[in-house]
Image 1 (cartoon, one colour):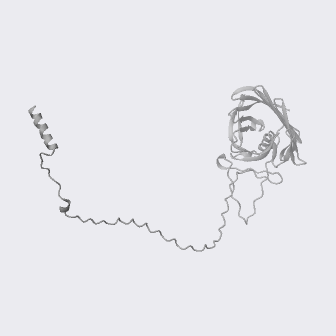
Image 2 (spheres, helix red, strand yellow; image 1 turned 90 degrees about the vertical axis):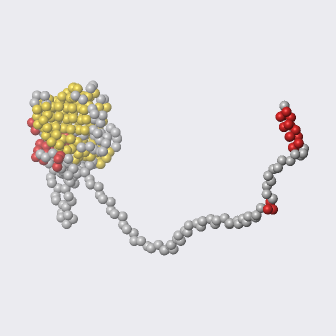
Image 3 (cartoon, helix red, strand yellow; image 1 turned 180 degrees about the vertical axis):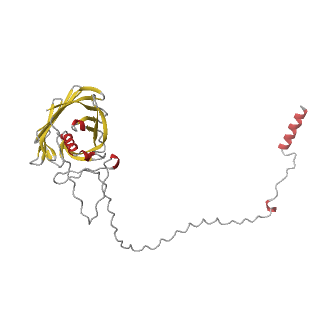
Length: 330
């Protein structure tokens, strides 16, 4: 308690200024030596980089126009050469491709004359019966009836796929160069369509569909083309001794006319049930880049060069096969 009382008395004395405590004082401002301050100007901003002075523009000089290079001519497929008279020639290529083409003759050399077309030798009239298969499953037999009297012909093809009947007929005249069709008919189920070929007016008339187009050279219909090929092979079998020979046609059905090429691709053995026969294999080349339908035919010398087998492969892979079984002479 005594200590607390003494501390309280001391604080009272200090409060009323009765007791002075020495406190160190700051030096007088007048005694402090002056300090000279020199203010420096701010540094100048860096100069921008010098821009290059543009060179004086010169007056444009007239330029001599350079002609554009001539576009290179695309090589064409080795199509059949057709003379104005209707004669045809075939092209061959190594390896059976049928795409080789002979170099153009020099300008100062006259082009060689067009070789004559193959000789046509019509097969005798006959009725052929074929076993019919769809994807390997046997269907009712198919029939090919061929009739000719030396001046006129009639070709009838009938087949059944499942329970549907398909029949095709071609009729016309016969010449030294082969078949000259005048009428073509297609019967699918119960619908029949007809095209007529007017040689005097040089037109193809689509009677059922309507309309007409000019008749081209090397003209055949969809089925006469096969008997035309048969007659050519019979008349000149050596013409097809080397794979790669290509024959070109213009082929009509009941709707249109389109170019078509058929190539000889080699010899094969065909099992006809009772025998194995040697046959020459021909194949229709694609008509356009997306043509996935394949048509093939095998012609046998032991059958008077008539078909030993016909096969059509549809774009979806369906295969329709006709294989020779028997024949009846007429």
